[in-house]
Length: 433
Ligand code: GLC
Image (cartoon, rainbow, N blue to C red; front, side, top):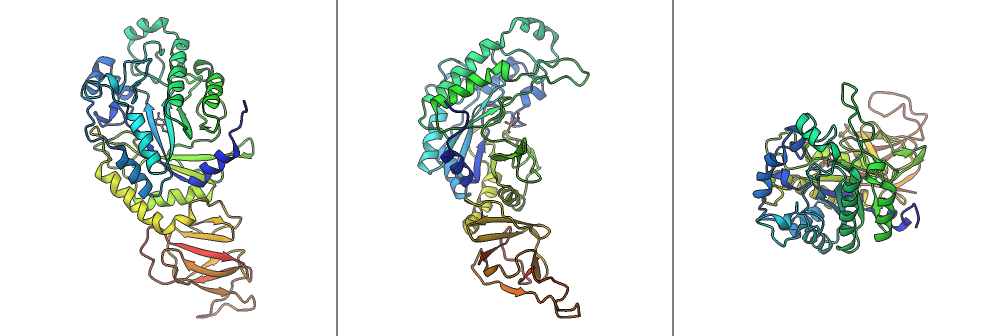
């Protein structure tokens, strides 16, 4: 037993660079955020209609996997169970599963998902909620839907989180035993010691509640090649910035760490019908580029509908990203940060002797690249392989009206067309000598 994942798994994960997150469960029916049970303080009884009406008749994960592959994604992570507690597979230790719904008798949506991903050549990950708002032994705490219900709290006084932990471990064992090799285990989340705003103890939960060390050891024993995220309240194999882009390559105690930013299309993870906060495909491509330029991955989420489909807005966004990726994949896949400092509003990535300049805004006529004077033997736009003219600067050149001056010799200047190429983010491929 080792504490570190095999180097080959780390390398594979890093090369993938771009993956699909899928948040799907009963909350897809109320269609107003996956935390609806918490936000609206719904009881199990209030929530029961979603179990009773769960009927994703259009579920065809082959379509999800194809949309992901065509968007340029290389792996997919599915919510096997979210905080609501509903399981997408026929768990032996629970009745709160798809297999116990009227529609889903005998169905295993996780199995279908895994098979679909494999058929498209995608890596497979399981998101699994540590939190459970349905389990009868999960103590009511500050994030629980019944947190303000005195009567429910009194009734729940004898709950034993260790009984719940046994259940968590048993389910994790099922997930990592029954579906072949799994690439990623994505637990969510810990909040030890968290307090209510007024300072009261929130009964937050962490490593002692989940028995995280033991859980992690079991995961590694069942799946020696798996990568585990960092939300068990003990260090994991990769860190998971959520809904923000870090300032630079991420570190823990001064040491660079593997990381993956998880991001939404519209701020919500579950299907959120009336939400209008959609990010543009251009912004999402920039987030992907930004992640890779800082040595991270992007896990981009889609919340399928209650019918089991990606809605048209999500599909259109994935298709736009896919068109960009079709032309620019080589600046992303397997790319790493570069040692050079990019000009304002640009990002570099690098693969071997090829340096990729991503221009987030299109400059007028020229772009000046610090530190690259005399170091580039060829330059082209990546989208159409059209040559980009290089100007090596003459340090004796004085500033004057129409001849470029004031540029030092270690700067390489590129001459750009006035028209921005018709792609979301133009990329210039520089061949270093
Ligand atoms: C969270 C949220 C959540 C989402 C997740 C993704 O912590 O609770 O709903 O699943 O992070 O990162």
